[in-house]
Amino acid sequence: MGDLVLTTYDWVPEMPRGYVRDLRVRWALEEAGLPYRVESTPFEDRKAEHFAHQPFGQVPWLTDGDLSIFESGAILLHLGELSDRLMPTDRRGRSETKEWLFAALASVEAASQPWSFFMFSGDTEETPMRKFFESFLMDHRLPRMEAVLADRDWLAGSFSIADILMADVLRLVDRFDGLANSPACKAYVERAEARPSFIKAHADQMTHFAAADVARG
Image (cartoon, rainbow, N blue to C red):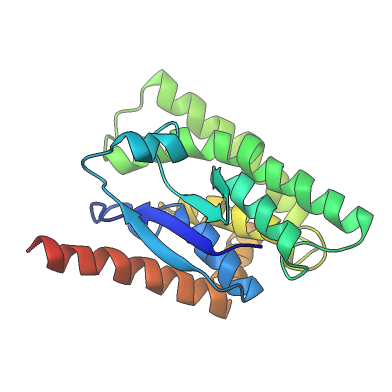
């Protein structure tokens, strides 16, 4: 393992603060107790160096020595390989962790993200597309997660990178009261948000962007 450096934006508007995806990486690093530092890349003027690390001009990315890794799921997998606090060491536990991490991205976030775009916009018009995405999330994805989380605290037995990703996906749904009819999912998010490492990661992200406000005057 080399020197771990997490890169995020130097500033973002207030609306996404607390939900920018470097939070997932901060959280994992805090859970594992791995030393790291945070660097910034401009939000408003994305240059060639940014795209060299993140082809879509997004954040975060993580450098580990001579490695540069983008996409939060890939970064979490990399960190899971570095710490048994993030991923079990047994074959079955690792397999379950990986499948649930991908489920969070491909099955749950793929449904929740389009719905959250409508919610962020504040547009309340009931268009066919909005109804489709709302039904996809509320009628097809959340009920399945509700059934899974009804009888377990964490997805793969012990807390893992799968929970970091799934809880972060679901907490954005909860931001817009989307878990009102999913008590097991809501309780899961609350358990995750009560973890000291989440509390620190969230506070550190908010402080990072607040400091940028001061610098911008």
